[in-house]
Length: 258
Image (tube, rainbow, N blue to C red):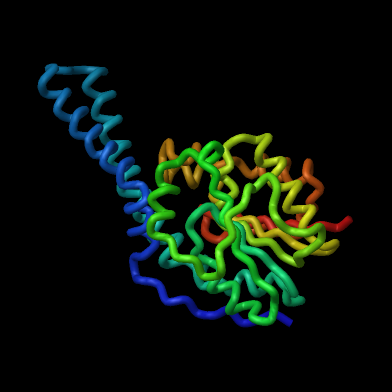
């Protein structure tokens, strides 16, 4: 029997505003680049192919500046993603013990606590500057508020016992671990902390065409579906389910079967 999710009040444009606030330097750089390219077209008296190339570059920068905000609003504010019912539907049995793993911004522990109120819950921040280089993480951390008592830990060696949890939640955090070797260590240690039959819920944007369309070159900050599937296989997870929430977000429901 699944638990009912707890409604979480969010502002109408909260997700889009957060994306802009955490990445404002990138948006400022994009606007500056557009201005420089358009001005250069006139000052350098460009014509023909060069003028066309500058115009295309400025147009792409303008398009992706707008599309990233529009898609962020759709994904984080309008889609079912932050209503959380889709998480409750994955668990026929309520986890007796679970942990929410994030990289500085915890927006999910409160909702998870509402879904699984009887379970023993933990939240752990695995931010590590040597492996997580995005400036947006630091800006997110400054505005973060913990929904559960916060534990900071090294993602390569989580401070939990073997087989301690029925469920792990890793929502928009795994891609921040940029080195593949570090990701392997991370996933192996998460597997260690799960009981047999336990699950890891991994949620990520992908390095694919829809995210390229939405975020332009920023889609390179994500990893491909193939990479996540290969990582799961190499570390001992089985794919129990896999599905999309909007064309821009992929969910991997991984299981420890041995």
